[in-house]
Length: 110
Length: 121
Image (cartoon, rainbow over the protein chains, first blue to last red):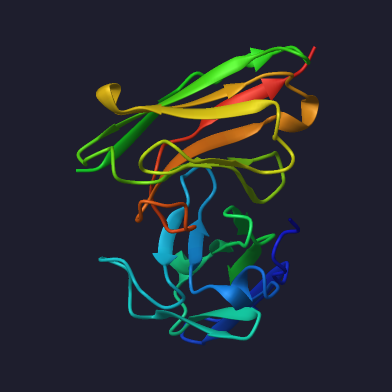
């Protein structure tokens, strides 16, 4: 099971919006709505920010949203803030009843 | 408050074994799927293994299949990962995580604090 494909890095200025893509196949992202996104700061546990493509857990800012088209899911962060600087990972359920993560995207807020 | 508290990480020689533990509190341990996820130095997150809420179904990444065994003890609210035939590329921080669903769905809402496993001679 190959990792989902994410850009290695993205950047933006405070107040801007950015999009992180996550491309898989019909056997994972394209086949299920069990797509999640995680925010990961160094030396901390990953934090679930979106589940089921576009559901925000309680306490997660509405600046985070998601979508999916075919085999590609996307995380959109609007109104970038300095504290959004982190690594972001997508994940998906797969045909093999396993879970696959993306390679991760480092977000830099300039 | 939901908490997952991990233990068991250590320095171990190649070919050795180690068992990680993850004790849950603040939620009903039984119905939820549970997973182990790791992050090797300088690398991204990698899903390692999962067990269904009932404990009757277990799943593994190809990289650990046949070497690692996941299990859960409902009476102790504890998740385990038995790691055998350890290799240098198993060196990582290992996290346990609780799924929102009974099955393994990649919806990992709560995470343990992580425990470091180093495989080296």
